Length: 435
Image (tube, rainbow, N blue to C red; front, side, top):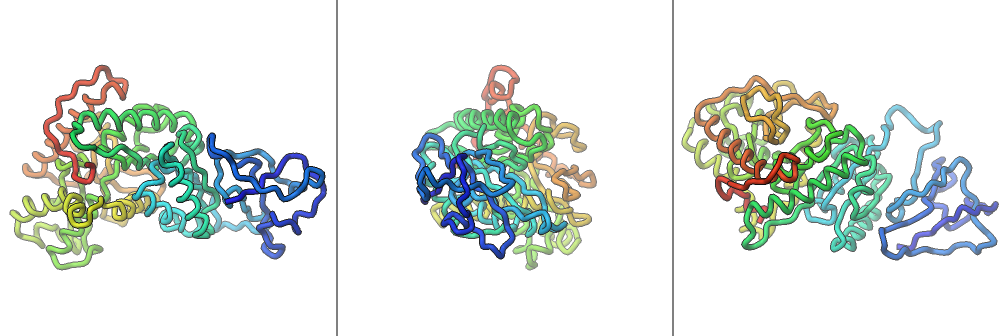
């Protein structure tokens, strides 16, 4: 896309008659154009619209400070004039997304831009992080966002340096991670992806908003979230999440199918532990129509065996059927996870997310990121649910997932500042979708 570049040397050309005017005279919207269009070291396409002797005059009141890496039409910022602002307009939020050229992001970004996630009155700026190899695809994503004409999407920036892309981020959705290749040991994957999340944690610590909320999706997400958190000491540990919402959604689906009800009748479902095959879908505390699941579905054997196995292996079955991993439903679960933090939790219900265990009321080992039941007032924060029950079956499986996460933590000690790494993993419990 050709982009016109303005220079600081302005004269008195009438902007309203120029081809650069993207704003009609009746819209009462003011605009300014960024002074540079920068894609790292790549050449920039510029469109010359005036001669050196006939420079365009900057609109009155425009701050000519350049902003790097804006993309295309998003190098224009449209702002309501003061008299047009109302209480219904919120301050624009900055949302950074890593792995932004991938399949999950391809579903997620358009939900973010549409207002589905943060609301229909919330302007948003998307800050997209890719890699050198994926940069062309990242430009393609930005072009599609341009063509979608989302009114709430005010800015898009793209880049491969997290220290630039994460600048002032208020939400960081960390999707990008290396998949597990043939013959790769799980310990190797922990180390390779751990280095990625250690670096991203440092970048967030340096340039993001001090209260940024971080959602780690790239696997192994629990331990990646721990690594990221340990490398970002300025950010509250409570702000880091590992995505286990897709597991919760899958559990709700299976319970609904078994009971012959629709999904919205199922509540209080918890995924405990690691996002691996040691995860624990909790049917003991779950409810259907407000009644304990064990009173609605009286087949305990099905709950303990088939239900648990189906939830744990659902991703692998999908891959066999479709030949690809669950990108769309993962994107939906990211939306659900964010909305659970920015909207008040319905009374009596809760949601699952992987969070730091320090101070938890359950007796789960501290110092790891563990999926647990949470409630939110809708302010981006959460509190752990205290009114849950355990039996021997549930607690035994929770402890198994805890043991796995403690072993993973030792395996990445060199990335969390806790000494020399010692890998003695209890078994290969990586989910099929991570292969």
